[in-house]
Image (cartoon, rainbow, N blue to C red; front, top):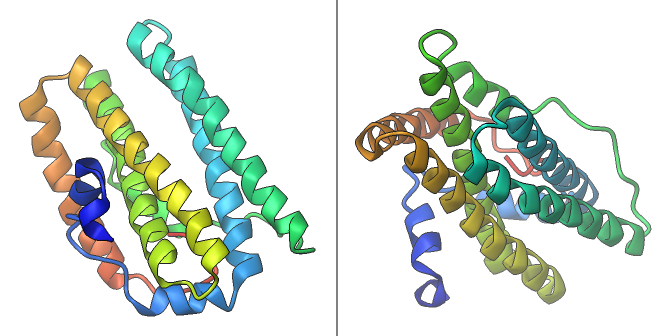
Length: 204
């Protein structure tokens, strides 16, 4: 299957540390929890894009590109919610997102506006990249054929989102600076994933 993936998706699979194979098995037996967490991930993606637009209204390309992404991410939230409803499962309460909070901890808090903006964009790119990798695992490893196809669609979508945030960062900031900082983010995320508990009730 990997040979049929887009170049973007293959690049994402170059994350420094792949998902622990046990995660898919754990997720499959906790479907209500994983769908709930997935729904909130999509919701947060939409609201974060809105926040980026609000904080950077002068960046015309960003506003132009992220506006439809808000609609798409909210549509994904509704898709996951519909899947929960179809299975007579409940949307549970939103949990504390340890993974995302630790990524935020790595963002530069001081420095220039450009540095802070870059880290915000790379944080989003990394979340989308890891989400794509997780969705790929689900699309290949779940026993349920319908759910494999369900997550294949999300995997393909997230691959495009990852590249969008990188492209936008490079539009406003020198490409060498973006790539250097991205390399630092990848090393940090590897350490984060390596130390994280393997749990099947969450996407990240």
